[in-house]
Amino acid sequence: MPYLYAAAICTTIVNDGGPGWLYLLVLLFVWNAFELLWIRPVTLLLMVGRTARSRRTHA
Image (cartoon, rainbow, N blue to C red):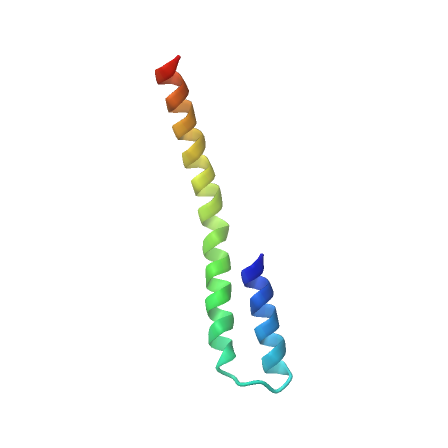
């Protein structure tokens, strides 16, 4: 996932002597990655339910 990759890059920069405030970006990137981890399955379930209801009403 791109968010986790960006977090890894920021962590590497900080570990190599970069500014510590980049850890705030790491926190933001990790938060967004975990948010997408639960949103995708929920969205998929909602779409499957909507498709099933649509097929029942049109059949």
